[in-house]
Image 1 (cartoon, rainbow, N blue to C red):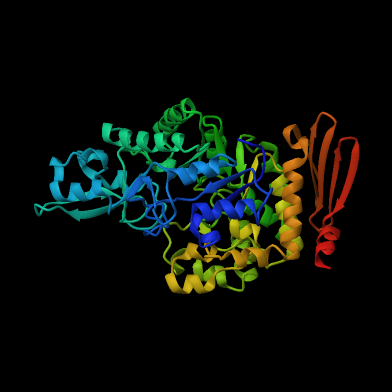
Image 2: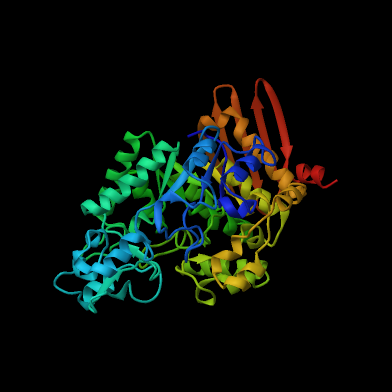
Length: 493
């Protein structure tokens, strides 16, 4: 995978188009900006109860978007990342409907997890209390079978997302079928969606247990044998992320987004600098994604201290709500239909009160932090919260999942903050120093991030009190000094 900035996008939402239309946007409006693209679920259907993360057929491209050959065409020019939804599939799938019709006689019965299959002797109150829950309520949903009997199926997220039994031959065959499709279609990087929940074992939390690591390791080896790299998608305590990073190809740096916000809000860089000194180097960095802004990744969990204290997390969340004029409050937690309660739903741009210089500082830190940066389509275009869509759907995460037209992209690309961001993306892609060694210093409110590779160097210095930000580049025996505020001002004329 190229060490270039990548785009994260829904195929149908960035230009209200299909796979061919997305490639055209990448080749024209976004020409030379991205080395790769994370195609958010494009499987059949893209408009289920969880925006494609509940596939009826994971091995089929939604015909409204195109087919696997269209995916391959994008892969000829760009690195492609795609989601392997390892934990569940839709209750509307052919397989689960066959289970409902035929019960234990179904050839797909072993494909799905039931309470009985995990707890054959019954689920005690003690064991139930140990199960880690990403959402309130029971992790089981009762379905009535055609013969009138009932069965309790494991549903980690929603009642329409039936958990897969990855240990069975049927479960393995399902995952292998999708892996083969990816390989044939030039997918380079596989995002293991909700991998931490895939293994359930009595007497444990059923989340990132030892057997989960073994499962991810085995899956990664299969992907590696086909020439693909795996990326584990897990929101958890930062120490868990450090442990996971030692055992997989790549992980997300989900602690970075809240820590950058905290530094900008508090002018205190100590938590951010501490994290950057220990953060995994085999990571993908993000500020925004199709989900919300993760909080659990930087905060305390149970009796484990976080990178931020509980009080600092509360201040951070309240500041986001204030900066967004209460819009994020309408989309977060119990205020809207959310499957998780550990994220704040808001665009990153609105989380910073649409302050252009703060936003560009945040992106600069992301691009200079260790890892391969990804930029979500709304973040690229500095799109505000999609309140009209949120009001229509009452799905909290839709606040950051707008449907855009090509004309919306063209208009956004003329905004000074977007023009400046595009210059930063181009810099990150073309300076060889980012392939070298990373160092960091911090003093009072000042954070300096540096890269050196041979005769090339790149240095970012940010004063979080004054917001004064400087970038110094040495490449091909030439020196370039950029003052971030001056760069923004140039594009504001």
